[in-house]
Image (tube, rainbow, N blue to C red; front, side, top):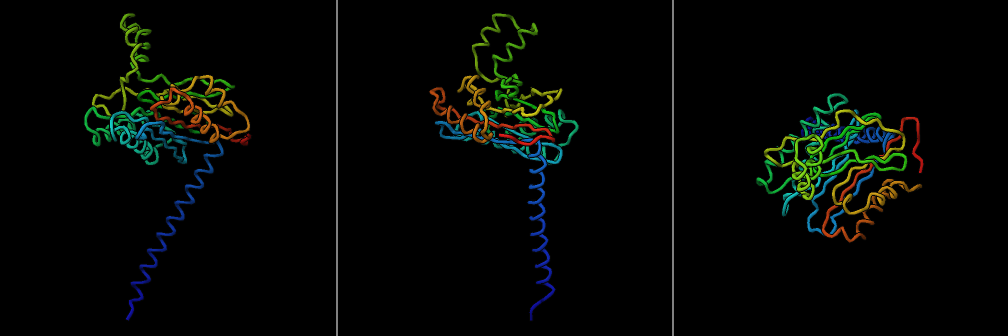
Length: 288
């Protein structure tokens, strides 16, 4: 004889599961719709001529804002790939679980330190790591944090302006020289180097470049996150000209930038990744 109560309970649990999935899908659609009122987002990753893709990008939406993360892995074999994936996923997870409109600097510090710890747990000492750039857009304000040599810029009024400084030895030497902490001869020597001083995956990691004062966005600003494989493979004017093209989407711009890099002889063995976020105020509509 069939146990009707047993089957009724199973059906009820099954229906609850289906309902939960539907609610999660609706929530994601609503979040995307809310954020897309203010932002159009596109991203592209290219492996170049390398055997392993060490770049990883992610964009996620929450009720309080939009997070973009771009990670450029360092190290041999799978170490760089693991480092970039772990760092991006860790920061994204923390944004969804602990992010808010307040205490953005605190969030960046906690998330980057957590990502650093997660890499160290998974990658052999000094064998891998990642340059990581994260940008958060809340309403009309842009916040960012960076460790390594990824780059953040903003395209406004047909001009691409670099916002981040980075942690390549030559950049750090330049800053220290102007502060009076480094002799000219030492600075000149360091400027010839292109090694990274800080990156995620170091036990001695401590330095995060954080935007303490948010950047106020203007209508039609394009926020640009890019790895070294992008900005070192194209001239600045080439990136500007592509960003300034009319009547094309951000996806088309990403595709065009990657294609230009593939046709450039400098792009011999480089991964390259780019995230574009175009800001629209609440009253404006997207026009292409």
